[in-house]
Length: 555
Image 1 (cartoon, rainbow, N blue to C red):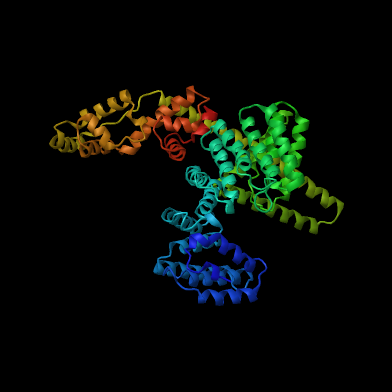
Image 2: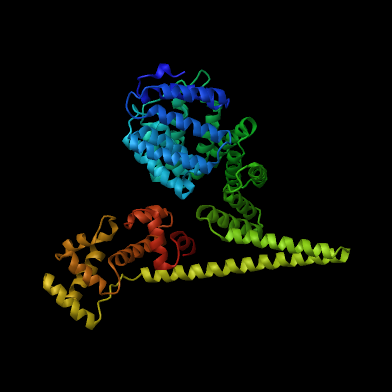
């Protein structure tokens, strides 16, 4: 069975060997498996890397797991032992293959062990050439997609760019198409560059035609050109929606949803895109069309097998729909629910779980009451109680929202008042200043309060904090002193260098958000010196008590 592969490096036989082994995997032919294992043991170890020994062990473990002869824990134990053998034999290619199988068994990057295995796979991908292992691009595409799903756009973009810049491999056509589609998503979400997003998305269809991927542009088993055309149209429609070009967005999204619903039955795709379609109709004040799209979206979400799918897009659209028709109470309820569901989906927030538990307990209590009181009067009382509880809950929820918005507004006003003043770096107390002055004087001959005053003037006039590269050493050079002296001087004011720097940055950020309402939060973060939005959000909330988005909506 394997004589044709004798004496050839793994990179040269990978796809042919894969196709040969599939004749064993998919029919689950145990007799052929036994024969394959026997013949593999006869293969010579030409390259002294125990390739065929590892292949046989890997094949048997995978086959036993597929036939449910062993559990996932037993499979993982076997694979971990194989990793040690790969290190012993210095076989990096097989180590990567084993790592990939382990990664898949850990539910990918969403678990601690899966994340660890993902990093191991990345390192190995950088150490192995496509000549040694042709599936390198496939592994990068797989990881890139998982990073994209969990919101690590920068990491995902790096891997996916490496995929599209890889030589085309006819044995694995799909990844080159998927990577371009994913880069279009990243351009929209991460870079906020809709033109670049359009370019990547359109390149999907161009690429399929240029590479002549099948006579009818067929990819793999079930993805055809018309399906990709629908996917691309949906994404292009979303970009038009973000541009507020709703008349152009609607036909693109409608045609996309129609095909994916009728031909593919991709309910997750249709759920999201119909909610987006509803928002387009809401924007042009067509409530009847919006309601139709919302109903389709809701039905599709109910058909999605993955129960923890993010449904906030539907709830948000419903909130805007009720706002359009003037039902502000329903609008408030749906918008608040959307915010809670989205936060729970992104941060695994426990409030949703608490809410569900409370609902379940209330339902249980209502059922017990119903059993104890079988008369019509008891049923009426129960109904009135339920109605009363619902009204109380609604009133409390509205009051809570009003109070919360007042608190946010008060914090925003306080932050603006603070930002209207220059950041003050308090000089040290007389007792500590005397000690510090001696230290600074020994280092530079300059007094502490004078050094602090010069530092304040430098930051206010030169705005050096706007650079994400600014360091304590940088400021020390600008002041003509040394890092140790400046650090001691700052610390004696009661704050550290990082806190001081963030105070200046947040001060300016507040002024920018207050005066330039159309400036994206991400751009504000970069303008005032933060490397990423996450660190900006953290620092902003420490100083003001609000996130930048909360401040912007309540100023």
